[in-house]
Length: 333
Image (cartoon, rainbow, N blue to C red):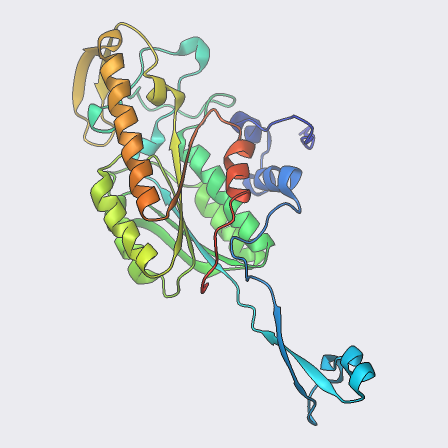
């Protein structure tokens, strides 16, 4: 296999580029270290040891804990005290509902495209992933989740992973070792899109399972009613969690690509609708703007960080926005 490490000077790593790497773990390592080595800062301001005070030396204290500068000034033995540094726990939830299985068609084969959510989406018959074609929303989200897990373990924090659309498909408790990371990457590599979307219920289950607060990252297309979803997210915010929402959509969903008559099929309910793409595009885009605006409004009202990306956008752009975001700390898990 002939691979080259991407360069930082203007070169971006496209989603399909990661398919060059046979190993999922190696692909994520290239993604993270090739662009962000040394650039990631903990989302919490107080995530490192901080000097607190001095106290007199007493027999039994380690000699290395003595402050020799204080001894030189005062001729007395003092020990430095530090506030205890605790690791942050990051909980990543990846939506694996059937709607996450949608992918854009390769440009040469694109046909009239889908609607969105309750507007129903056209779904082509199941096919294997093209070796160099567009990624599905789930595949794209899995790489994002893997990169975040890799970053957290690299900086010494613990990370857990939950998969599910309406209920848990998989829940891995927090861990911070390389073996734990390998297990998470294997889980992400085998993720499959199936079943309905009900993230509100999944979040309630995760809230009960997570014993300590930390950072919650939810990766989804968020094609469900915002009300129940943000009601569940509000439980985390109320308890002092930091919440990051990463919405993944396709260009076809954003633009309603295509023209002429098309059949739209909801991949979760399998309801069908025949419509003329040109005739519904304006109203579709207006409804989509309203829906996305509501997501942004509800997130902002709860001090939740929300960002949106498409499966055609370079991973570097999606992750860069996260890395440049300083999330104020409180008590972390």
